[in-house]
Image (tube, rainbow, N blue to C red):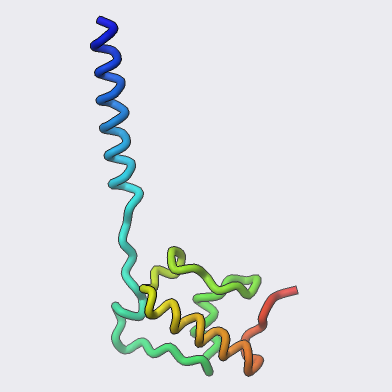
Amino acid sequence: MADNRKNNRRNNNKDYDDDYRVRKIRKKACPLCSDKNFVLDYKNPEQLKKFVNERGKIHPRRTTGACAKHQRDITTAVNRCRHIAMLPYSQD
């Protein structure tokens, strides 16, 4: 009887862990890869504000859903836009 409880407990936990992993992992589509007409331009701060939070920090890849190549492009564009004073470095 006690053995059955242990086995049931293990099976239940295993099933739960498998379901949890399936729900947790989700692949986001890169917004720049999916839309071929979208061109990232450092001279357009309104476009770059989607990738920057209200404090002026650049969102990470897990938040933006961008691939590694386009996340580097986003970072470069935001830094260039900051350098020419169209985007603030930080909010006070």
